[in-house]
Length: 567
Ligand code: GLY
Image 1 (cartoon, protein in one colour):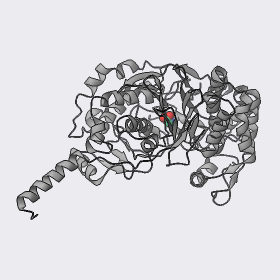
Image 2 (cartoon, rainbow, N blue to C red; image 1 turned 180 degrees about the vertical axis):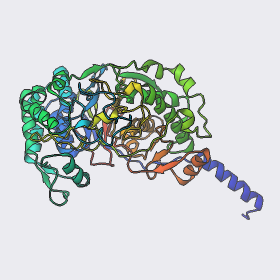
Image 3 (cartoon, rainbow, N blue to C red; image 1 turned 120 degrees about the vertical axis):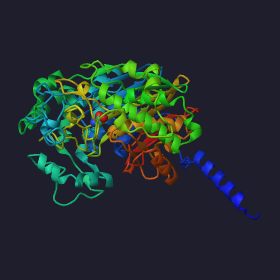
Image 4 (cartoon, helix red, strand yellow; image 1 turned 45 degrees about the vertical axis):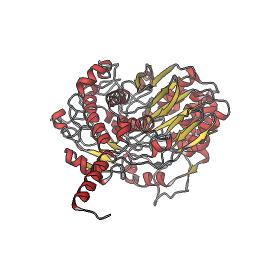
């Protein structure tokens, strides 16, 4: 057929309009590990194996969670920890859900201006590196509380695998050595003693790391439970480490630390029930705001990766992160308006000025100007046991290896969670997140978090266990993973593999992974007024889907060494 000028024009118009509608991306079909009964997905193969062994030995999901939390502290020291904290959201097979907050606390000797100089300006990196950056750790108390309430196997059985891993050693992965080699100078600078992580020359993948001091610490935790960490020899070593520099944590802080049971946040999304972490995490509030706000739009029809889907997600995220900065903090110290922020009436009004064709500049949403400084390390694991109990845990030292301080003689890293407080109103933390009075430093207050361990129910049954590390990108990564399954009909593994985008209000920038945004969509978004920036991996989602036939799909994130082990 001869192409006349008119048919050529019509074909071009048709092609253009088709592209506009069909500018979605496809994620290649793939499935995760399928298990009939039980599943563990976490950041390191050795720790996933420890969890699966506990489940095979008759342990339940909480037993496995304790064992995995501790095993990660040995084999995934960049974020796995006993010197940090975290959150656990669980759902019992019968449907009862709950949450445990084992987030770190500000030391008794802290004050709101502790990172400011005489002129009221932030002083260097004191909230990020070294002894003053450390919050009172909550992980060991959290694991003890989980075990006291739900454990079925003896405590010792859950801790022993970590003693063995630390004493016998394990082979380092490529990713592990790259993290360790990149921080040799910082480790040496921050620690006044030799640490096992610093050596002559580079670490190489396959080398075996033995941690004798850590093995002895885990023996004390195995034998004495809470007192094996917050009292006795471990506490003495911890306090000596604090005194060796400018640390302010005392025995009174260790004695006072208690993790807290909290009611999870629950909301409906397209016939599913979302169960997530309440404050002091901002994760549950923000996730529910995003899901409720997007529910009235046909994003499933628009498609994954389409310009309309990304534009809408971005505009909602800007407003949600602006709310986070102003309203969210520790509910034990600040009246957090959780109900208002997640109510349909508020959200309808809040999102009313979202323009699907134009970017609203962040400056018009709220004042502020920040830049992102450092990437992040936290870690997440998801577990389902044979009975159908589910536990979703996100745990952290904050930055990679936290404050970089390793307790002399005890072999574990201490967090730098104090940087998650707003050290001065409007001054960004390492994630570029700003805050205000709601998240100011107060002794014994918990710093605001973005960690979003989440469960999803469908028709009254467990459907998904999901969570991720990634600092400020945690919330949007969990949000996209849930959309990928519910709206974009992906398998769990596709949903995890799918490339991600992120906007956090400030800086006013769409961050995206390579391949998350096609050239055509990038052009559309730029025309709408957005700035875009390609960056490395966003999140490392480890998730489990309970399929309609009852089988489990464990999806480990290939962005890391993460692995699903199930049976
Ligand atoms: N430290 C990262 C977070 O809690 O969000």
